[in-house]
Image (cartoon, rainbow, N blue to C red; front, side, top):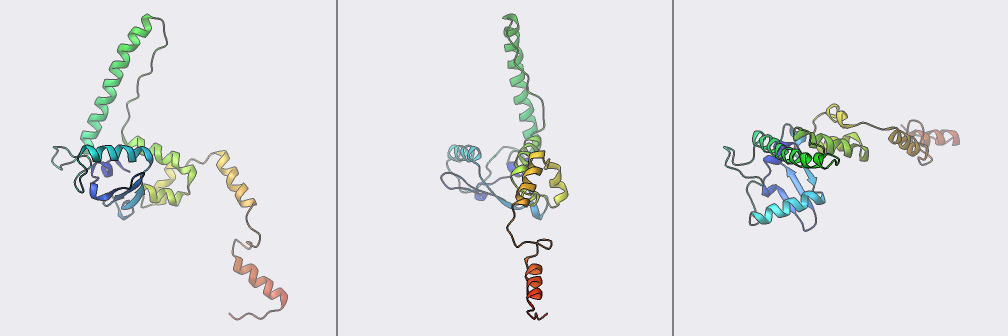
Length: 195
């Protein structure tokens, strides 16, 4: 989901069914942005905990705040994200000072990144498991051209495509049109065809 879609999520568009569920994205940048997505286990656990912490509301914002819109907003999310990374890095710098004195290996600092990067990473990691049109539907893209930014086929994916192609069922020839082959067989057998 786009960060804005997450921030504007309402409980009436979340179905938690005991082990998973669905999220309906009801508004978006385009008609394609309106979609229904399955909930993966990690998201399910987070949403279930949040739902219980909010006394299991049937409606309302999933991420309410005192902001003008009544929910977490894009700028607030970026600010909180930056502050969280800065806090972790400050703690890491303190820990590294002690590690350095002890001659031990230092801990790496977290890179600063936009929360939107997580969407890009998720879509890029999902791309090898589905075709570009399915990925476009999941992402809510209105153009397949946008989806291609997330598709980075590796050599093994190309090899797998050729392997599947080489193992296709018999009878699918003439550009994949079974009808053309059947028509050719009738003509060879001298069967009259009506157009």
